[in-house]
Image 1 (cartoon, rainbow, N blue to C red):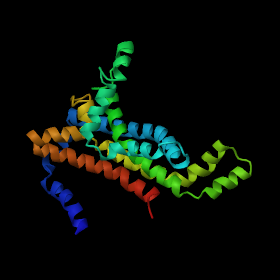
Image 2: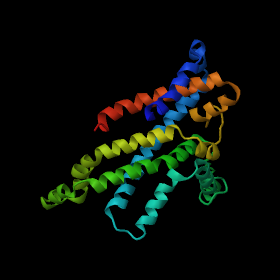
Image 3: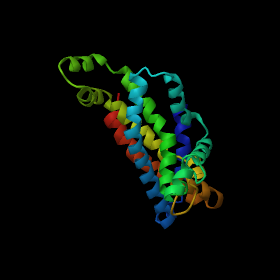
Length: 245
């Protein structure tokens, strides 16, 4: 029953798909631009999350800093908040009159919202917690005796981390990266609030699907099928390679 509940909606999309005009709809310049932006922003958000999120996960898993529980709750917060709230928070922080964005704009003229960088920032904000939580769990479950043995044999902290810790938690890092990428690809609320919905500039595939639902349902179905196909093309090979039991 659970499997049927999950599969039937996708079957319904396939049944309603406008197969005769699918190619024409998918080659529309606005569609290709939205798909390109979605892929670029999702991969960029994943890369940023890997660079920033792995050290953060290590800090939460391996240090005893004061207020660690509160910090962990703050890290997880974007996972449970409505995305539009996250977008509003980003706007008040990095917008033209934001706490950080205001001085930056006054000094350099750089404006983060309503740009591709705003899309990437919104995606990173909502997706990074998935990576951090997964990697932290991997670090907590890793057998630290191997790290202690390497240190006893004279390996420095960086060498132990690079040669022992990272290989042990590599499956967790891969799983976290996949979850992060998938979350970023499907992001809607924070993106539309912080980066807007400018066709050809900040309009991602989820935003294009939402607009198409109001005016052209066949186009919305076609765009949805593209997102499903792209997601499966990435998730299935990575699942078989890194996440298999």
